[in-house]
Length: 216
Ligand code: ADP
Ligand code: AMP
Image (cartoon, rainbow, N blue to C red; front, side):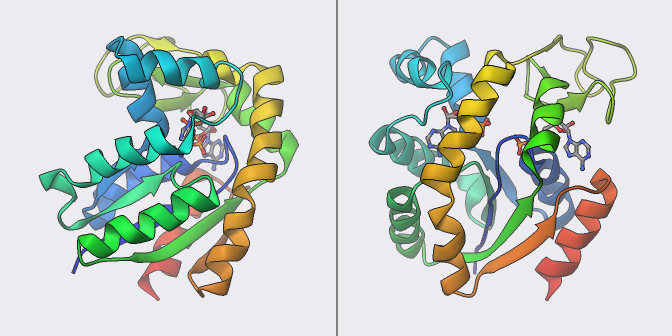
């Protein structure tokens, strides 16, 4: 049966970083809703234009279009064995829709690692984040610098700083997270699926904790 893992946690806590490592380690597809939106913006689609108007302000993109986009991605053949969901769901409505769509594929959310860090750490991480233009590989100028400044180690593409990583926008994203996404912590805790992971540790240690928790 397919395995679906939801990575929950505030912006900048390290979900994307860990999702890439876990996807390789446990051979699951990686679905990042933020990357899907950024792909649409890059390709100048109608969805991209709509998403950008919300992302620039640090607000959530409306549920209906977000759910439809993830549904389309999760139905692709490479997700047959399951997926690591990074950045989705972010609202109770998205969580309910996810259960329904996974039930159609004969699966469910198996576990929900909840990675935590305080606001000062989130600001420091997002303000030093550099992302690659081609595939969204993520670096940090202090904690995980690329070998050559401004160039992605993996695919050689240019690194850029996300517009929504400006301190004002991140502060709003954290506020939006507490208002709209925090209810999911209780939702998944009540379902017995939540696993708390301390995100204020080196990347390798967070990965070890995640792998140990997922093995249980
Ligand atoms: P998220 O997907 O949750 O927004 P990212 O994985 O993009 O977060 O990480 C945000 C920033 O923090 C990136 O610059 C990344 O390199 C860095 N980072 C991720 N995990 C750690 C960690 N454990 N320690 C220090 N920096 C980290
Ligand atoms: P992320 O790459 O996860 O940091 O997301 C960047 C931005 O994309 C967020 O601030 C939102 O504007 C938008 N976004 C990503 N995922 C979702 C989601 N599940 N629901 C609504 N908006 C989202």
